[in-house]
Length: 477
Image (tube, rainbow, N blue to C red; front, side, top):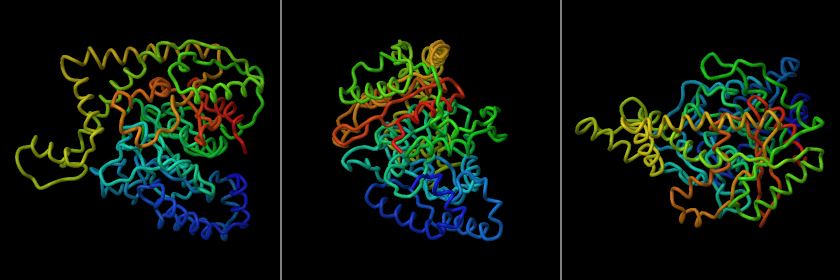
């Protein structure tokens, strides 16, 4: 059932929202045993929210007629705080942490009638492309099309449950360097990463402050647009939010537009799996069949230097952000023994995973005295040049196209053989739009070996509506 039809049935009392929510939660529990999509299922909260909606429908149905998400199940990546629900960012160091407040996106979604069903699995603090870097004690989520393969990271649980759920559901994900687009591609769903600052980060357990963006994942373009419409906007609690009007993103779906110009980034078709290239080329052909003017363009600087600049900036910011988890003010603690450095090291060694430690060390090195100018400052200058190169192309093109990921969803046995550098190289397509703070959308464009292939559309700042308009061409529904 389409989400918009479901909402109308809730408003007209054709569906009992409490009964429906009970069934949705039971389905989540069953899926979780098999696929590990949730770190926490918020059953009590969801049933309470469903009862509140049912009560209000009886008292004053008209008061709910403008609720965009009435009765819709919404999951939240584990890095997004939900009041009273364990929120760990996938890390054992935050085990037992139950926030005393809702993140702004949760508050806004609930105000629009959403029902929060749980916290989805992720790479620890968002550090990964495959969602295999889960914190100690957490389970790795499995691809909805093949349980021997990865979901993609770091919002893997969000993409997986979006694909598998039989009930209307939209997920809140988060991207720093591609953590919405990558799992959306591997799981065959629409993943929308908005402009940096379009959505408030208040209540997000941070990775890199200048890069983090909360976005949406849906079975179709409409669902991704609907949730963005509900959560976007300025927030007094978050200084990086943009104070611009919120567009009616759902109005962009299937809206006809003439003279759409698409730039195909030629560098992104080098050194990729031939099966991925074939499906991405088919996607480009579909755009052409729908009247888009297609031209090949060069974006050499982002492709050549984007990864290096991203990993220097992101790890530097992560090193700073994670310093607070020292066993004294935040996170897990141990018996006080030894001096500060000994205690600090013991807590972090025992409760942080291998990839988290690697990125902390990399980031600490890059911002040390004597290295800051050579690495961090230089990376920041490269970032500025990357933004300029994108802006030059957006003077001529409505959107840019590339494959989302260079490979098909890999088997877990294949990932184990990859070096850390080979893991980082998987983000080659996705890091540059994130560095530039540009909105981008993964659209499913086909299947190979019964596995989904994604294509990524990137647009200029605050042009999410344009992205959704183009992306809706790939909406099979």
